[in-house]
Every structure is written in structure tokens, then in C-alpha cells.
Image (tube, rainbow, N blue to C red; front, side):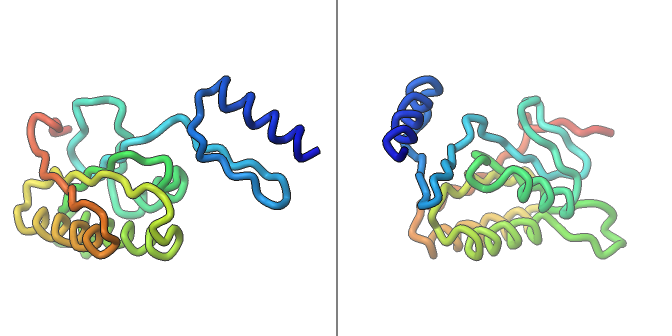
Length: 159
């Protein structure tokens, strides 16, 4: 029976050209890395020019979408810092970046891919905070510090 599962896995890998990142667990469950990789864009006003991004408008939507997609299925995340009305105590892109780092540490412990991070915020201090926080985390887990600042023509305003 185990041999049949191995044959099936080999066939799936050939048919779908999947990487050999398939694990057969003791109870014969097979986890297949999804072929689709996503890009998540956190901003309350702007929309990326590239329509392949998944747009989330606030902190709660970001957490929901990240939980739904899973870190291992996300290639790139782009953060805006200021989300919503500044007169209301709203969570920022910096808060979302902190949640992402903490979630990764608690749930994945450096065992899967950490998404590439862009910051597209017009707020220079907020941008620097996100970049510094994520790069500090990447340094801590001994990965290359690769957070990039990307502004125009990356996005267009919705207003």
C-alpha cells in the first residue's frame, strides 16, 4: 500500500511538475505545495497597476487573507503604513508587519519561505519603521535583508 502511494506521488509530480516538497506523513496524508503563489497588497486607498495583486484595505482584512492563503503560498507582500482615518485609533501597516513576523515565528519557526516585503507608503517614518522591523527580523533568522521601498508607478490612487 505504501508503494502504491509512492507511485501516485511520483505520477502527480510528473504531471503537475511539482517540486519535491511533498511530505508523506505517518498516516499517509500527502501535503502538496500549491502551484499558485500570491501577492498581497495592503493599502486603504491605492490599488496596484498590476491586477495580479490581492488587495486588502485594513489590518483585519490583512490578517484574514494571510490566514486564508498561508505564508507558504505568498511570494510578495506590499505594505502601506497609514490605514484609514488618522483621528481614529486604527491599526497601521507597521502593526500588520509586526503581526506577520510574530505569526511566522509562532507557527512556522523558519521552516517555510518568508515572503518578499515591499513598502509603498508615502509616510517616510512609517516606511522606515516597517523596513527596519522586517529587516531586523530577517537578520535575526539569518536571512538576507531584502525589504524594498517601492512607490510610483507601482500604484494608482482610487480617489
